[in-house]
Length: 511
Ligand SMILES: [Fe+2]
Image 1 (tube, rainbow, N blue to C red):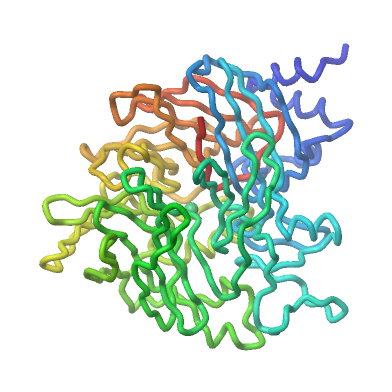
Image 2: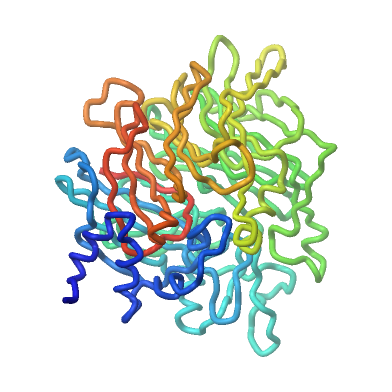
């Protein structure tokens, strides 16, 4: 007798039954799973490549099957952002950073979990639906030139940017509004319940990049961010905003602006770490410029530079040079006894960006590895020291943001991989920077995403809460939301989704 969808979903919560669940869905193939199942998993890491496979269906599942006991105090939603469409017809996006943005929401209600996903209605999404092609430039993908189409907007060497960016990197909650962010500094607003896109509040500026990781300071009510001007007069602009009023804290001229993805914040300083992966504007102006990312060049003979900007008075306080390294993510920063502590996920060089081309990820099943690196700088003496804090590889960092951002802290959570060898993310890591130790959660054949920390109501300790991570279960060939006790890193509960969710980037929990 054929099972109902609900029964199948319930069965799907058992890893061993996962294949059966997906197969039974195949007649209508509503979630694109059957095609993946048909392929024999001869990969180094079975099921892994589903993480870079498009998910085209938008769905709403009211009751996910739950293993374990989902805490009843969870009453909000985990919102996630990431790429979900990696090709349009015969045209392919080149890089993991390029796929069309999809929002995901796991919502909690008295131990039950629902799931919804929806593409962001970006200009790129609309071009997919209406014209069936890649029409706009992404970081590492340009539209296919076609003289019959008006693809260049005035200046032939400029990338073709849509009015509504493909904001596939992160999510921000600002004054009750939810915004999808990327490095084109125009947020796209959306409804956190329906995930419907609500448009933008500005126009895309050619030649300007921003950050998908702004900071919010609850003590001052400020939102802090930066902009990078790629077109001369080029440079880095540090910005603070409060109740809609915007103030420039510093403009740091840079002839060849370096790539930046995030920054740190302390009580007194904005902390920027520039790296010698610089934008070559001359190359960008040439007819064979290629997508934006291909115009950056790594200069191993040049230093990385830590820049402290005064939050109150504005201006650069001091800069510190160190050996070149590459970082996407700051973990935390704070002041201690006249020094500034800056923790980052440090990569060897910008090869980490190259390694994330989709062809390479799919072929090698590897990702670049970062170290949990601490810099301490003294603004009075100019002295800089550095050391790695834990042994484990550490990326996509999260922490108890409201309690410890910009302050002394003990714990951070990230993804890593066993043994520090080559491979893809296969474990979650809790770093204890006081002891220099880490706690690990891992499960064979399971690839976890960014761990989001959610404090328990009235929590008394920094790690009194849970960790949420969307994992791809390679054995079940489908994804799940895993909830861990943040103290022990033991699994508490798991809500299973009947299809795969492509590897995403960032998200947040909202009550
Ligand atoms: Fe990021």
